[in-house]
Length: 403
Ligand SMILES: Cc1cc2nc3c(=O)[nH]c(=O)nc-3n(C[C@H](O)[C@H](O)[C@H](O)COP(=O)(O)OP(=O)(O)OC[C@H]3O[C@@H](n4cnc5c(N)ncnc54)[C@H](O)[C@@H]3O)c2cc1C
Figure (cartoon, rainbow, N blue to C red):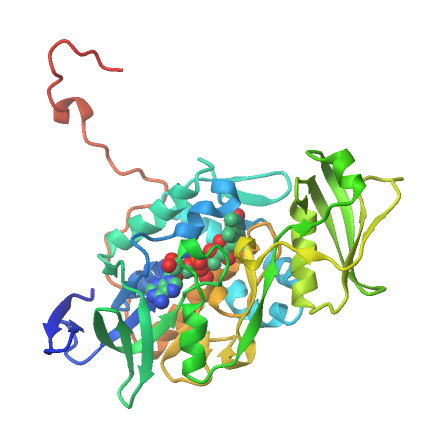
């Protein structure tokens, strides 16, 4: 794999791989869902890589997914999932999600030691229902490939030169043959996704679509809400409106909160309003059959920082869908939410992040003629032997009983 050398050039540190004297074959920026999967797949495909992360740990947003349970993907076939993304994402994501389908994704995680469970409505979670186990699974794969990760390394600049790209962090710079930007959207900025990738892409000449909140609640304070506060409606139907025109429909959970309305049906409706650029955003809600519809005109969404997904980002026209490569800067690739990609609730967004990351790395591996390392693969399903706890246990202090 890629071992690195730190060289002080009198101004700052320069990171150089020891295997290749000139530049690192691949620098992945961002250790979220997309960056972690990209680094795992770089290991699998034998692409020497270095992963840079702005925060002190990996996968901060992943840990929050599905209320800490992490809805990894869905049981849908690729075509059905792609159709739910809607235009223009259906066509854009088709090569990535066809190549790394929800079924393939499930096999990958299970094959790497993460047992999964499927709910009746077709959502897929880790069997432990712990998002932390997803991050652990990805980290275990990275450890197996000795993939170098550098934390506390916010990338501040990327410059394109004749021989490749220079990636500059606050404290060191790296020459890279290829760079994969996987810095996420701009919601929940405390998780590290603050829009750096979009800024870096813009500086290199890419178009960036304006940010809007996707998958977020609606602020509302009518008397109906006061009477139903705290209630849930499991099969609500929401007509999504632009003025009088119906531009979509969502169904599912509706939750009456202190500040307004939330739940899957509302989240998906706000995503449609943002994605379809509704000028006069409205919704019409039927909470249960035979109930009169509630109409909310001039919908006010909760702020972007609270959204589960960012609508907007690097313009799809500047990314090739079959390679995830920039059409503006040779050697630059994109994966995940940094691109103007967003999906409904139900594991769509993680599926898109993982699948675009794999496609980018597959392209890089193919173009660079890298060969997968010869590994002593553990047969699927076979557990690693556990050390004999009794033999290795530290002696118990006298007088204390084991709990
Ligand atoms: C509360 C919540 C719940 C969600 N639940 C689900 C769910 O159950 N299922 C689902 O499919 N989706 C869910 N999502 C959406 C999903 O989490 C995101 O779509 C997905 O994490 C995007 O992955 P990403 O790798 O593109 O970005 P992120 O996961 O945001 O990762 C980006 C990484 O890049 C790093 N970074 C940023 N800038 C720099 C820089 N300059 N230098 C170095 N590193 C940098 C960040 O620190 C971060 O680690 C949820 C989102 C939220 C907020």
